[in-house]
Amino acid sequence: MKTLRAFLAASLVLATLSRAPAAPLTAHSTLTAATVYTDRALVTRTASLDLAATGVTEVTFEKLPAALLDQSLQVSGRGAAQVTILDVTARAAYVDFTPNERVKAIEDELRALAKQKRVLDDRGNLLALQDKSLGRLETAATTPPVKDGAPRLSIEESAKLLAFLEESRGKFTTERESLDTQLEELAAKTDAAQRKLNELRGAGGRSYKTVTVRLDAATAGTLDLTLSYAVPGASWTPTYDARVNSNEKTVALAYSGLVRQNTGEDWKDVALTLSTARPSLGGAAPALLPWTLDVFLPRPMPMAAPAVMKEERSFKATGGVALNMQAFTSNAPALADTELRERDAGFAAAAIDQAATSASFKITSPATVPSDNSPQKVPITTAALAANPEYLTTPKLLPAAFLTAKVVNSSDFPLLAGAMNVFLDGTFVATSGLRTVMPGEKFDLALGADEGISVKHRRVNRFTEDTGLTNSGKRITFEYLITLQNNKRTAAHVIVADTLPVSHNERIVVKQLAPDPKDAKPTAEGALKWTLDLKPGEKRELTLKFSIDYPNDTQVAGLEP
Image (cartoon, rainbow, N blue to C red; front, side, top):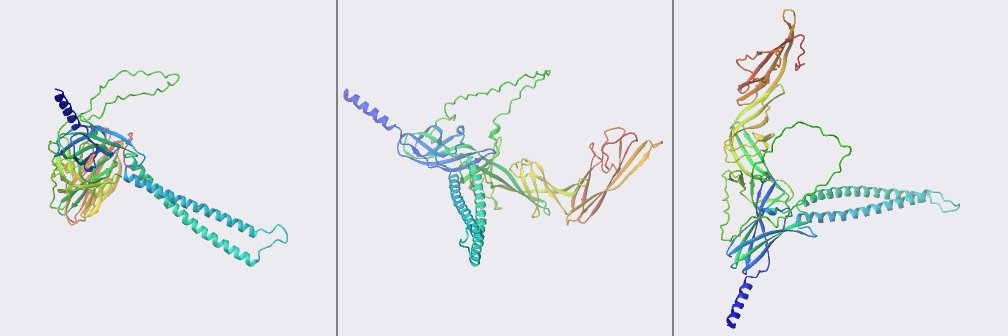
């Protein structure tokens, strides 16, 4: 009986020892992917582990950004080892050195610049002392001796001394100027390095976070462990290059994303995805508050201003990282990567992944984005769109014809609002903006002024006369001439816009004399438009003529001088 008990006890001890915690492992991870939103990024790190023993093992990911959002932590694993992920913990760590290599390099540069400045300052102080010594020597040589019979310098000795002083002061002046130039250059370098350091330190400074993942390994073997987390300090904005071919009536639209990040860690050769989702908006629409009305009752002014009390707010600890995750084994299938695509045109294009509320653009080639807020332009797609060009001019305000292309977004990509550079027949003509355009939606491309369409606007006549049987009224007649000429080799579709005055009083009567209202009828706001198709070299003249009648005793506001 005793032998059986001893055997069972020994077996229990062996079983306990076999499940004892294994030695902690440091994950030598690599940042492999980043999904960038408008105000943050979700980055993914991957580490290959060799679990030599079974039991509970702690795996640490060190020197992660201090601004890492704890609630965004996600962990997955896949490998030969049978593993269950138990929990994930994030802790802040503080060090007396800078974990960011870029920050450390700039700090070293600032220390070296400070040493150079001390050397230059010391040399400047030495030059100042030498200059004072020359001054005392000159004073002593030119001052008459106090006592009679004291030795005096001869004319030859005085000439040599003056030549020596002049030469020495010339050297001092040249060296002082060189020294001042070096100090100015050094100050500029120091200022630039300090600004760069301040910008980089905003991503984490001298602190970082350590994430610990606890694993329970049933069998030993290899494991690829993936850690994902969200971090602020990253963003992307769309940008466009529109190249218009006026002869072929097409627009080659290059769609790119400007990516910036200052998260505290450089992204080197990562799988980059640009997302249109906006996590900062939340998941639901905001709730409306009641809109109440009441009688206004003025409050009496107090005799003395009450003391301002400081509001104290207490925040209850959550008791750990709210991951809301379940333990799972590494047998779960890994996320499938979207297959990279190539386009025959030779331009890199992103693969689009449409979701219910957003779209993601997966950049085809690995991207490198340093953590210094410098813009990195990555291509999303290029699209050849049919364009129907037309010109719009308002000669009354500006005698120029602006080219506009009517375009339909025939691509599968939503075009987000962003800045656009416009090239017309290979020439940069304008910088404009593009509104958000969904696939299949029509939009206008503002292509800037075209000097090939000549526009002139001038007032031909302004005539005032009396009206009525007793000259009790006045009439002012205005006449304007608009001249357009197509100097291009192709036909041009031109829309000319002008305005007629609109009366807001029945005593003031506006009558359109030219053009005939049957040919061009103004809107209620007085807008008047002509639609012209000008042949190459064709010249056209348009006349706008109208009269304004009103009583003599009425003063009319808005009349042109």
